[in-house]
Amino acid sequence: MKLAIISHTEHYRNPEGAIVGWGPTISEINHLAKDFDEIYHVAFLHPGTPPPSSLPYTRTNIHFVALTPVGGKGMGAKMKIVGSIPDVIKTVQQTLKKVDVFQLRTPTGIGVFLIPYLTLFSRKKGWYKYAGNWSQKNPPLGYAFQRSMLKSQKRKVTINGNWPDQPNHCLTFENPCLTETEREEGLAISQMKNFAPPFSFCFVGRLEDAKGVNSIIEALKIIPIEKIDQVHFIGDGESSAQYVKEASFLGDKAVFHGFLEKEKVHKILADSHFFLLPSKSEGFPKVIAEAACYGAIPIVSDVGSITHYINESNGFVWKISSNKPFEEVFLNAINTDTQDLKEKSNNIVEVAKLFTFENYKRKLDKMVFKKGK
Image (cartoon, rainbow, N blue to C red; front, side, top):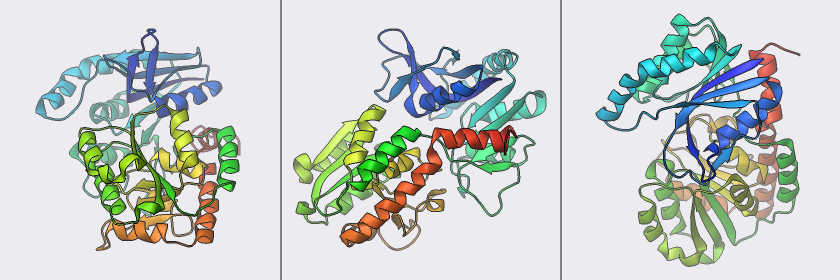
């Protein structure tokens, strides 16, 4: 079987001239390639230096099909998307002729016109993946339009979480990010963790208020410095320099890494007691599952489908719409009894089982391709 994947994944050429792309997506496709004859990935090829989180394709049956980058903020960027429609549709048309089935990964700028195009003008077998917050009450207009179109699809749609009003064709799928080997190694590491202060904390994501970086720094200000071993901020953003200044009271206990390769991220998660993500909007971030693999206890907000996996038995949840500040949840976490923390760590490791590539392939076979039991 031959598969086409259509996405907005950023690709670059590395110094050796090889195509590399955003690590989590490329890793997923590398694993899928074991079960398909050919995979064609239609996505954006950007100029410039690839970030450290980029990975190469590792299998020769994966073929990258380049699109000219479009999208971004502002009316000018939106008009470029409109101008790109003929070229994008032509590329998609040509690629679909080569395959048996497609996956369109949404929400994305090009999804605004590709969902209607594929719905009305293509009879090719396929499914859609909606990686955003399926329950978001006031999403951006483009996201709302795509979600509305997907709710009325005949094709399958994979989404984050399990919702009361979920249409039958919308299937709950965990986004894969772990191998069985990584999970087994993570389990061994988690069993060795001792949850007595000083604690190590880790944040992974874009450095911005929307992801809760400001809330994390404010919470750290009100706890005794001797309870902190290290605070790792992995990622980057326009406000990163400002956050470095605001976290200066931590001295060398605060480490701003920028973007890192997956192996280095996992090493830090393996050494962390808590994973921090008081974000304002999410679907379900893969990095929560990656942290869970190593028994790092999540202190997270209750957005998207996060609370479908994280609860008081395996983490600490900040109800973002309540009057309770994040600092209160944070203090509760670090003041929790050592044995109770160890129990939460043991419980969160179980969540990681759902996010393996092997489990993802089993669910694809059963729920999308209708193969096996």
